[in-house]
Length: 223
Ligand SMILES: O=C(O)[C@H](O)[C@@H](O)[C@H](O)[C@H](O)COP(=O)(O)O
Image (cartoon, rainbow, N blue to C red; front, top):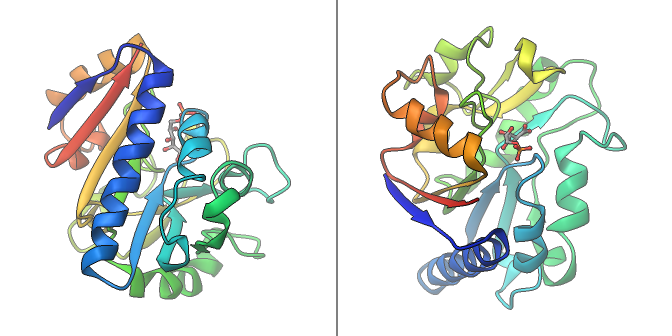
């Protein structure tokens, strides 16, 4: 794991947006298409604001979430809504967005169709992850009902998980799909998350799911 500390959040968000844009541009020099997989939550909005304006060929980039909360897109908790408002706008509006949400009562009913749309875009070219104070990443929550299956090398691309801390049911990319990414970044801010990350180093992925993704990751942090 590589850990990069920034003097403040603004500098972190700008630098990370430029780093990710540079990596996507590099992929597009070598390949016809690239994919970008990003978290929802409250942290990445300012980074999305910068990234959405960068001058790369977004029409060749598939964008999808790490995970989605099973709520309608009109909900303030919808990660899709965050993406539409903060990332898939400006130049990045030309990107191909692959949803992790469908109009079914349960995430289980939608898994197959959603996974089939993402499958052709693997491995992920650039993966950005967030992390909660409880050391969850994507919707791989400690104590989630099917966490062990979702961490296994044999896990399917997508799974539905339920956890008390998650609130609503979740749909998430599983550990092997995330681990297969060609570049992995983790974006965290604040003292509590830095401490949680340090704690995770000494724990197993079942106790601290972020641990499953750290080996090849660059963690970006500011107070
Ligand atoms: O839907 C989600 O909850 C996210 O994708 C999740 O994995 C997120 O990255 C962390 O919970 C951190 O969230 P914050 O940035 O809000 O702290």
